[in-house]
Image 1 (spheres, one colour):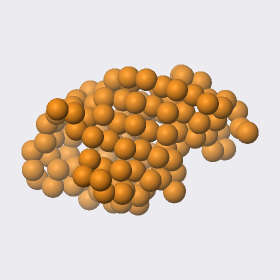
Image 2 (cartoon, rainbow, N blue to C red):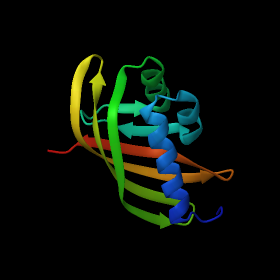
Image 3 (cartoon, rainbow, N blue to C red):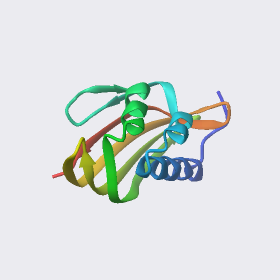
Image 4 (cartoon, one colour):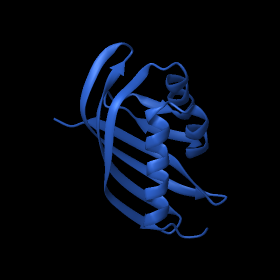
Length: 125
């Protein structure tokens, strides 16, 4: 088993991920997402790392304003679970989108770097 993860490690990784999502920085996202990432969208679609990176490269999602809070972090050895809530306003493929979104991520340490290996997200009522 690798080095344990601290809460500060997860907070730092979450903030780096949020910042990269805001500006669609595919290079940073590429570093933070594991090659075998599996995510589930609000529609139930299974999203891979390549699909996520492609949407950021194509700028199909434009975030105009957003904030995030980390609701909870649970750590077990070299794996962490995080729950974060993002309040965002923007456009997806030209269609306006606004609301609160809850993210559940599974982070695991690989060669000293935290990477997302699993995720799901949903829009809150």
